Amino acid sequence: MKTLSFITMACCLFATALISAPADNGASRVPVLLELFTSEGCSSCPPADRLLEILDQKQPVAGADLIVLSEHVDYWDRLGWKDPFSSPQYTARQQDYTNKYNFDGVYTPQLVVDGRFGFVGSDGREASAAIQKAIRERKIPIEISNVSREGNQVTAHIELHADENYKGGRAILYVAIADNRAESHVVRGENAGRSLAHVAVTRVLKQLGTIELDSASAKDVTLSVQPGANGSRIVAFVQDPRSGHVLGVAVQKL
Image (tube, rainbow, N blue to C red; front, side, top):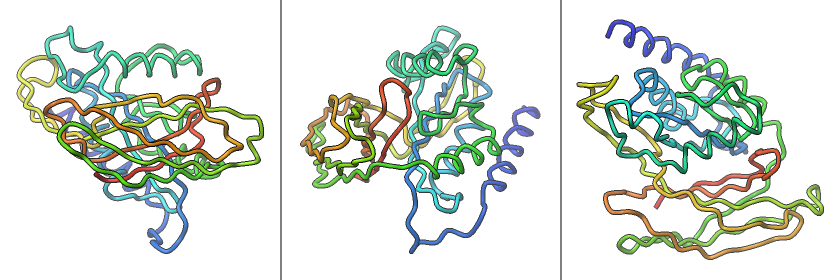
């Protein structure tokens, strides 16, 4: 427990170091996607979950609009505690990043910034450096509108602007639905006895198909949210299938 307390304190100190300048609400901010691969069965993950919460709520990096997703992997489920938010889909997505970037195997917690940079998810200094690099990359504007929910059905309209700099380029459009906050009381495994809280817990992640980047496009989408999910936010992003780089991302609260 002392070790965990020290890690949590260090995480908060690293998060403080992220604040490079006061946020300017009037300035244009570059959207950056942060994906945290985590698990409730992993004792090293709570500090990373906390860092993701700080990044989401405090938005501490000047010039960046941090859009976060918590993706719970399932390979810890066999070790004493089945994470209720875990899915083999997120394990496969993390493995795909590992294959693209020749990482030395999958691990938790891992934070992937804009599909470009991957590192230990509780490392605030590394997060700061990666975000600073990501905001210098060109982004395709995405707009999410007409968002509504009826029962377990979420509908939205998604528009992507044309970008002649990607002439002939193609990318995959993804849409995710995530809960703003989720909590669990863990009774077994490495975190036994602890109450854990998470932000932006991904409940749905779906590919909507391939788009032409040099042409404007629009899609009306309908997604089903499983029972028990709040579905508090919808995230749309486009990703290069070869490099894994996220070329544009947007979020809208439900």
